[in-house]
Image (cartoon, rainbow, N blue to C red; front, side, top):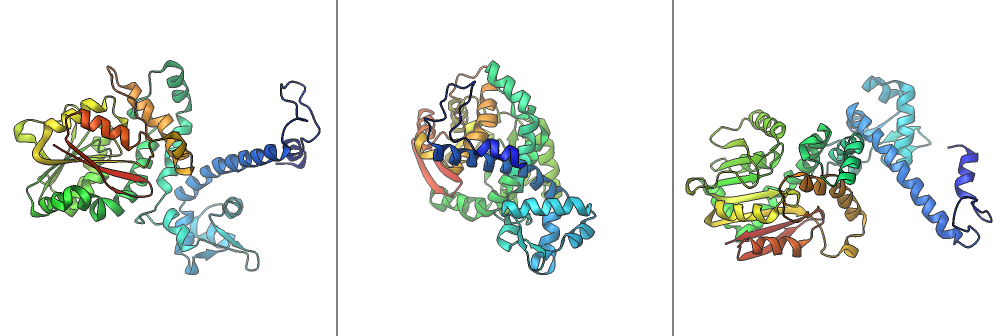
Length: 387
């Protein structure tokens, strides 16, 4: 940004806008400058998100992380990745200005701290965050669809989004699921009895809204003597889940993926489940009360429902923080629109920040006698429901 443009943004003291109802002589200049600084920070972050995706696609973060001492020069990084040196130079400067990569002015080298590498370069890290940036690709590409959904109120189906949403979600949630599902979430359910049954073998588990199947696969690998069935109403996701399951070498008697909605997956007496899991999917449902009633019907007498939901407080004012900002944005463009798009919906549009009280109300109204928060993480709440 040139000096003239910068001055136009920041030097407003003592001036009036001829076409504005605001008198600049009457406003608090310090508050104005503070807000303009926030705007510039946010625009810089949004623009830099594109460069994070480019760094991921070109392997730039991994290349730095793999360097001895996790440091490199512009020339070394360009040579090791086959990327144009001048572009690498500017990319590194942006990343240094963003605080993602560190720059040493004495050695002229750039480094990726190991803490940053966990989020940017390590696919197996529990805090690997690149998937969240990939989802941004879909949201920008889907802007016109989202705009239309706002105007018509007809919503936007999950499957009508750009494919980067599905892949980004798999990568982002996958890291969190790898760190928590087997390690803490399942052990916390029903006093550990669910985990015990899964370990003994013979248990049947339904993963409703399974997407690409990362949660289903993690459970099947951890408890190889039980049966896991992933259900989703998005055919492309089911196909991807089947492919992922085969890639992991899982047997058909361990895992399968079926095209079905949250209110019509098999629930006959021979098809009932010891565990029905909703991983970040319950709040997306068109009619969550109907979904909960179907889960109650499909559950064995001593079975348990596990709902993993985004972390949210019950009151709006308690969610006005960076995490709430991110979740409300995703909810506005993905979750609420998905609920609204389903025809014949008479249920509430929950959104990603529904809160525990609202979830509990729906579950109890569906006929469940027991509902409690089992465990929480900084970004999730895990609930259990029983008859």
